[in-house]
Length: 277
Ligand SMILES: NC(=O)c1ccc[n+]([C@@H]2O[C@H](COP(=O)([O-])OP(=O)(O)OC[C@H]3O[C@@H](n4cnc5c(N)ncnc54)[C@H](O)[C@@H]3O)[C@@H](O)[C@H]2O)c1
Image (cartoon, rainbow, N blue to C red; front, side, top):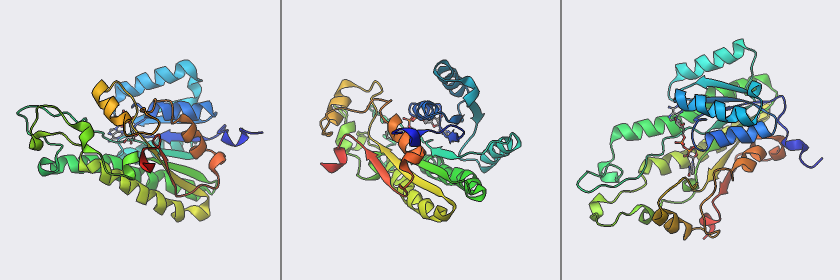
């Protein structure tokens, strides 16, 4: 059967940052394939509303919600222990949590997104969530997958900025001097490129235990950004538009299932062709 390998019935997938814009889409993608999903996040109310939204479309019995801070080893361990005590084994881990600082730019306010002004505490926080968090979750859930010897899948959500530098012209604001112009901060590029290194490392580390690891690098998702920004970005994309939030679902289904059983250590860049220009 053509789509048999996409089936995830009997498998459990844990998603970090699951109540955000894309996290809920990853969950829906996996539920569509028959998986049980564990939605994890630090935002309690958003988690509850993600669960409610998904329960309208899918069997609520297949959805579990857990508060989990990916920067805190104790928080991850406590979720792991809870799952073990309920005899739940995680077959698929989606490292999706990140902080995507909104690029603003205001007259008369020091522009802290710029390299010259970027605060060390912002660097530390963003790296802790986007990069260290993926390491800590992979350490706990990947180790369990390897020990179980039933195989497993880790998918790291990177970004098209894992393969090219931000085009800072996208974020320019009229009327601001050069030193006040907002930029995509350095952390985003560093974290996403780092995730690709982690993906390659993990892909070989547990390969003999049947644990695969790949990365998905999405391009920008339309989410009500200003018309000016959307136009600027669309001009850089051969397909001439941003992605819709649902457009990565099929890639998640492919990467998390046996449909990609011979894919390991790769970075799937879904960017409307931007990176090949
Ligand atoms: N939206 C896009 O255009 C886009 C494009 C490329 C890549 N991405 C990547 O996709 C992923 C999801 O992005 P999104 O747009 O859904 O972002 P989002 O901000 O909507 O969601 C991120 C989620 O991570 C959670 N989070 C933050 N800190 C956490 C922590 N310490 N522990 C656990 N969870 C934490 C937040 O509460 C939030 O729910 C990110 O890795 C992002 O970099 C997004």
